[in-house]
Image (cartoon, rainbow, N blue to C red; front, side):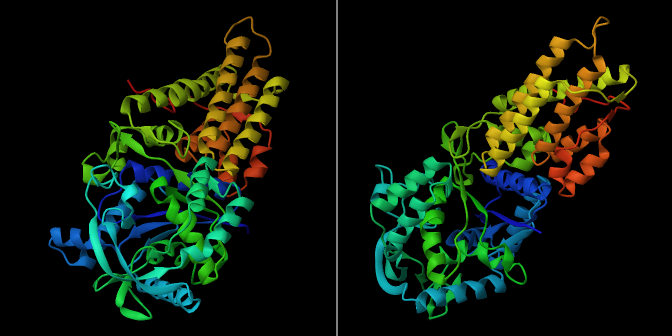
Amino acid sequence: MKTFYVTTPIYYSNGIPHIGHAYASFIADVIAKHRRNLGYEVKFSTGVDENSQKVVEKAAEAKMEIMEYCDSMAAKHQAVWDGLGITYTDFVRTTTPEHKTFVQGVLQKSFDNGDIYLGEYEGLYCVGCEAFKKPSDLTEDGLCPDHKKKPDVIKEQNYFFRLSKYEARLKKLFAENPDFIFPRSRGNEVVAFIEEGLEDFSISREGSTFGIPLPFDKNHVTYVWYDALFNYVSACQNGDERFWPADVHVVGKDIIRFHAIFWPAMLLSAGYALPKNIVTTGYFTIDGQKISKSLGNAIDPVEFCGQYPKELLLLYLLTSFPIGQDGDFSVEQAVNAFNAKLANNLGNLLNRFLVLSLKEGGKIDGETDAELAAKETAFVETFQKAMASYDLRSALESAFEFADALNKFVDTKKPWDKEAVGVVDTLHTVGEGLRAIAVCLMPFFPEKMSEMLDRMGLVSQRERLLAGKYDEVISEKTAFEVKEKGEPLFQRIA
């Protein structure tokens, strides 16, 4: 069986995931579900980054032992993803003995290759970002632009990774793989950064009691970036080695340099194959500010989905702007998008089909209109091409555009009119279009699309699709058997 491996970032465990985190997880989840429908064996990892100074500080604030705090937060993170129906196969924790042992082995490989050396570092360190900052990275007031705090001034002996050694190989990587990063505009930014010249970076802290001890110097621990980034490979052990290299990492733009520059160099140093693609998300903002727990404007995605349908949140996050760009979160806009695209467009089209089919006795088996059949073929091809390149927004929009065409077809044919001719053929054409949309959109809205196929009498197709038989199902022409209309598939929100 073909394999496919998709990852989210491992999220910092010092807070509960907000909708910005849900955005990346929804993207990875849709990609995973799509590949399963295509018949792939899918590995999908997510998890928590626990070896950080922020975790130490938060545990102290909560008056808890560090591991007690980590256990509590890991359970809360899993509860969020389970509550949103995220279908991960692996939940990574960077405090597990297996991960620590793996990271130490990788560190030793890089050290033996001469890529890690001891030096002295003096500079600015942002605890919130878990990263060293240059003055040019800060605001005019000397603050981290994301966390609105002054970085700590640190002077200590650290071990460094020879990133500069890999500058030429990274330039070659991007020259030969211009689509390594999606969208390409983010890749262009990374290339421009490399062209400025790469500096070696610190991979350890001295004297810390929490983290992974360096195998060649127990007085130092690593927790950025060897510990965090190699979670993607440590998850592919114990029989899962076949899944590496990852097919796609989904990451936020704030960590793209680490994933697109540090990560490939570290992999090359340790002798591992490089991931195939990186999908970069932009920021959702609220009133122009990045969503952040530290700023007090985070939105709990599970709580949000208790007020609104999960489909509303996913639709808005994936269609409000192209992947990679920034956008401002608006509940009003999210409701408008849900009503327009799902309730009024797709949901109304299904309702029309079901009502009119019942008037014809429920069994619909006719000829498909040639023009609409051609549009369906074009839609399916466009959809699959967009999904293959991880352009989820374009994939979704192609489905809604095709639904618009089907609605216009119904308006033109007027199958409810007593004088209408070829009513069964008209309904069969609409049914075929709806079937194609449901099959394609299954990774986005699995519960609703499953219900849609069931209402149309296509239980067998739904079962085979979920068993990985997409190619078989999408090309199959069928008759429809409608038994009841039921409640609106997508209830309009007032």
